[in-house]
Image 1 (cartoon, one colour):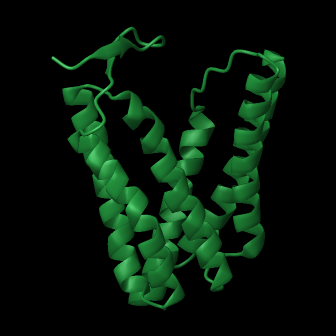
Image 2: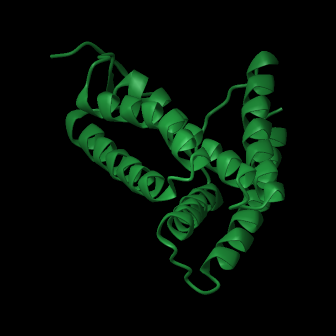
Length: 191
């Protein structure tokens, strides 16, 4: 039986194992980030779309496996990092090649920097920080994934679903503002 520690939020055991199938899948998603950037910059958006879809499938698979086999301490750190790296890099890259609005990429990246900086600041001043995603933040992530997928598919396969991209841009902008504001409000209550 692997060594473990108790998760303070759920009381469940968290494995200290490093090499687990979910962690390998998550590490694979992290390694896919520079490949996805390279593919988009080279104009190979069809392949980038497939890679992005595979990353989504491995994210679902590693989450399913972690729930069945047990969560690892490393996995709880790597999984959200892999998701953020892939989404943020795709927003920046797609904006750089003109497939997404630059203002939206700046908004998405700024929100993430603000949240990470706020967590760091709270820890620096000694306030306890419990990181729990808000429902609006989960909606924001789903909208971001959808927008990146649509932007890649439009560029890679010349599919142009009417108004979907525009609606997703609006939804991402709105949920980014609301979730960023909600995290700021939550952070000010902790101080």
